[in-house]
Image (cartoon, rainbow, N blue to C red; front, side, top):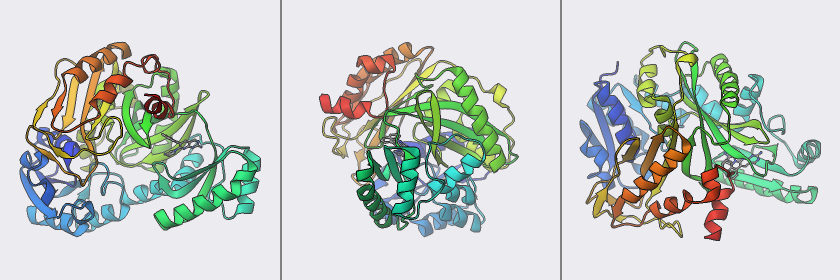
Amino acid sequence: MFNKILIANRGEIALRIQRACRELGIPTVAVHSTADAEAMHVRLADESVCIGPPAARDSYLNVPAILSAATITGADAIHPGYGFLSENASFAEMVEAHGLTFIGPSPAHIRMMGDKIAAKTAMASLGVPLVPGSDGAVADIEEARRVADDIGYPVLIKAAAGGGGRGMKVAFAPDELEEAWQVARTEARTAFGNDAVYIEKYLDRPRHIELQVLADSFNNVVHFGERDCSLQRRHQKLLEEAGSPALTAAERDALGATVTAALSKLGYRNAGTLEFLYQDGKFSFIEMNTRLQVEHPVTEMVCGVDLVREQIRIATGRRLGYEQADVTFSGHAIECRINAEDPETFSPTPGRVTAFHAPGGLGVRVDSALYAGCVVPPYYDSMVAKLIVHAPTRAEAIARLRRSLAEFAVIGIKTTLPLHQRIIQDPDFIAGDYTIHWLERFVARS
Ligand code: MV4
């Protein structure tokens, strides 16, 4: 086991990782910017190192400062959390070049999945279903036209270096293709410095369903079921569920069997999430995330697993020690992301939290680094808390969510708590009847 772990992150996820480390008896090092000197993740760590000024590029993305902090404190592993350096293959390589362990997948797998074309090519060759589309990159408009005519309109042009919704353009008919092609290429080149693009059939009303996996260093791979992350606005998720209200246990088992077999052949290691679009009873792989995700707690609640503990054990070379048949699913979990944002305009609302009261009771979990008197700085992501509820059925989880949201008090700054209260009262939400487009329309009509 590691002697000391440096956590290269801030906020609630830094606390989440500290908690797993503490239960394993491993001391932690926090890193922080000057803006976070009073932050909870610094206060709760065994040691802390200031790594730079507020701007993330000078602190939480400052690789030399983070590696120096690990060296001077004698840390032997780095957990990157999510965001920041978590999917930076070069960072993972540098961590290993310094004789430290990167708690995550191999740099080669991080790099492969960062290239959406390489990811799709690999998954297709391993039998994972894809959306109909181009076989790899599309070189020019003539080829784009042939592919689009072949798969049929509407089509979506995507950047190989994209992901998370950046660099996508739809063409609903042949006369829109050339314009979409030019815009997508130019955006890919300017945003990512890589103008490689590919084409897919555009699915018009999918759900966003992702599968959580863990893999050890001996090609043992297990999955922990799906999360439904369809409730998003501008590619920012607001609420996630495990399991999906749209799937049967048989559909989950079949997808899980395909995915775990594929990742075992690929030699993938540590935690990963495969993103699928689900429409008309079919799953289509779109991307793979090679990090711990924000919404991992809903999976932890229904499976009774500590995913961060598992990540750390895997990184030390331990075997998983259980099989797919040992993973069981119990009840239903829902997570609300509470952001420091105006619930109507979504503009960020940094500032001082004058009072803070988190809900509690059976089946309620709050992951947050807020405390009464803390300051939410303006420099980072606006998510300040995650409220996760777990109950035997989805209906009971919604009831528990309603009472927990009513108990939750974050005073001094506006948050998205009132928006969640409205969402969970909507008949479509209560029926589980929504796609990736539902929330944008809900926000627009209210
Ligand atoms: C799609 C799609 C429809 N058809 N691909 C957006 C982010 C990136 N991860 C993939 N995305 C999409 N790919 C095909 N072939 C619709 C989206 C999409 C989306 C996907 C998941 C969650 C939210 C979304 C919001 C808008 C569009």
